Length: 107
Length: 114
Picture 1 (cartoon, each protein chain N blue to C red):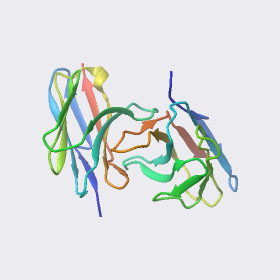
Picture 2 (picture 1 turned 180 degrees about the horizontal axis):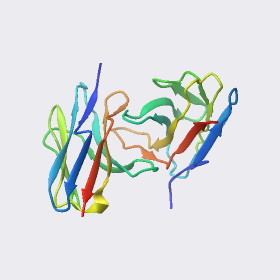
Picture 3 (picture 1 turned 135 degrees about the vertical axis):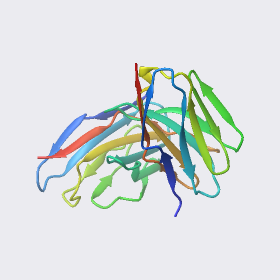
Picture 4 (picture 1 turned 180 degrees about the vertical axis):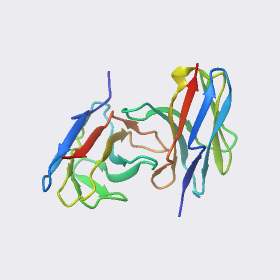
């Protein structure tokens, strides 16, 4: 069965401590991989789309990369306002979502 | 500003009652979706619609129903047949056309049992 797995489930960082979130998938025939940010009690907010291995996208302190079997969301020098749950979604015939990584950045 | 509006934000259901969640979009998107989000799980697709007057079941459609009479609106009814309806419900939309497009989400409705 096609699956999307995100790790770690939760990540606690100190402000300024860079790290990476992982999204691995077993989907064949990938059409697109999406990263979203979700704040508590809110809907997911779209961040990036990646279409092919080797592609990278950046926005402020976030950079998303894609290989043939996984994607990374790199967070450089995070701030407390980066605290949120980050969701990964993979599209082949339909869209499959991972369970998310809950990121907490302490000042 | 364009976006997706879900209402109400909180909803309570009594035993044996059907309840309807509203979803309206002004993004001029053809496709609309309903997801259910439970703690520790990925979003699960309930129903989707690619065009007015047409919709398809997702992975967990049992106990739910939808309609798509207008492009802008895609209401979801949680029927009494859905025995575990407590969850966060998210509506999304996306443009149609070639290529993979991101879905855009509303801010959800939290449904609880009285």
